[in-house]
Length: 204
Image 1 (cartoon, helix red, strand yellow):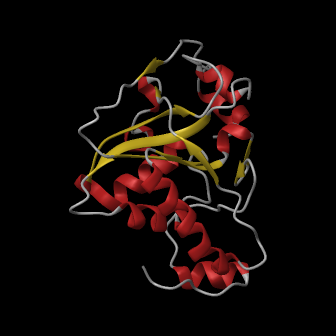
Image 2 (cartoon, one colour):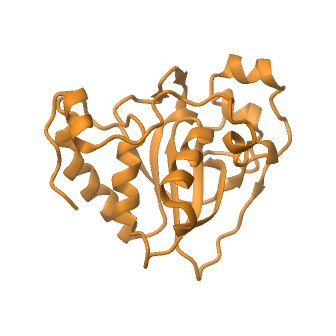
């Protein structure tokens, strides 16, 4: 979300966030695709109850318990992310990745639409070597659709997820007219290829 826009709506929270521990019996996915409000909305809309306990918050930074103000100022190098469990019998990690690359613009470094800063970077936080390998293969598969525009998505090991403040959770359901990044919508690969001058990737 735009810093100025968000600041007009409400003050930045300076409350330290809390780590959300992992349940090692469950399978997780964590993605950064710009403002986490729209990222969460996109995944909820697409997958419904095939994903569970979606939360927005911060990952990939250099400080424990960052505040929202610190993240927005770029002081901690965290990314705004959506973090959720998923049912592998209903949706595969490869399908999640395919959607991820179609629901935002992964070619703009540290920017999504008008939102700029490292917190808005396109990022996959992998929870296992298998997820990292799947993400690498996904980038190789979909890069042709973006033509000469190189995918800037970072692949980063998941270490900790800092749960966002309550007012951020499911924000666009509670505030349907709230700010939503203009790049957050589902595209077909044919549309991506047309927009970027590329060619559609091979099917999954």
